[in-house]
Length: 476
Image (cartoon, helix red, strand yellow):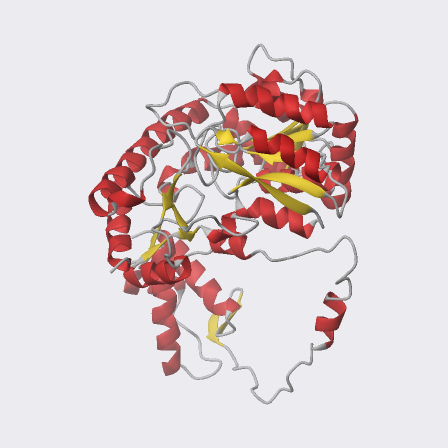
């Protein structure tokens, strides 16, 4: 049983047992709970922390854990109705902002312990290099000056590593062209807030990652969708969108696009850069899946940034997807005044990325364990993808499209016309599997109903197959 489900189960047991204790009575020691319930000390600690967060127990260092005084039910309810007026005061003004993060919150939601997770975009703990991460963190903490303030742009050694990782050994990217960020989402936020004025349009792929839509709207931008097909973004429509909207930025995922999994074709790569350069616009390249190439895949194309001599491309790279959701370290690359703008906006927003986290990232990618992990990960993702495709062919063959991505961590399923995505995802949860509805991936009306299933978040290939069998049950 994994740690998270053990923690939830123990918390439920202790929550029930609390009824036998009087207010202020001491609970058994952690050691006694470990012996009684046959769980690890970490599980006990986390379960107690959960109960403390719920206000059911209080912990007193050196004394133990005690049943808490219940909250008074007679307290007068807070009147926060005035906030409705205050928070809507900018309505009708330009730029209008939206903080609708439904798609992001759905993607980050942790399902109940008995539900198989085919929704998350992060690696299951069994796929994360936990030993290597622990070792890197320990070594980082012992580095001289590890807790000192880092340069605003990031540690020079880490910036140099990202420069080589993005451009390759023979590339012309240098450490001075790189800005360390707190993960890919933070990098996207910085890029859009830096390069696109509030109230103006920004071109995005359709469908696309819901977090990108949320960032654009929260920044007061107007996301304009450009459709994607089997070869990536439709460049004929991209040129039209630039001409019609006057946008000065296009955000794309050329490699294993989320959610479609498409790879931008060689011809369209050249067209994207030509069209953006003609429009006097930036291309913000979200290269989130670069380290998620499967073991049977051909060599992936280079980043768009590798074919860009004029500073059109602002490149986003992150370690989070390939390592751990908690290793929120990424990079932005740009040339010229754009980099100065990015640096200034990030400094105002968050000052800098904590140095211990940067040091740990540097220790990780600089160790032989990183290359071994990426090799192991490419094989593990291949196994899970094959399990997902095989199960879909057996259980729901009509949903699979003609192209199966050889990288990334998800499949984009086309539902029959007229399908109710919300009802289906709810039925899937009742059947014991969490999947993503397609609607949050579109800015405008969706042309058809879809589901996205992720397989990297499952414990193993057999769990992927079992999740799809449960999804089949949801169809009735």
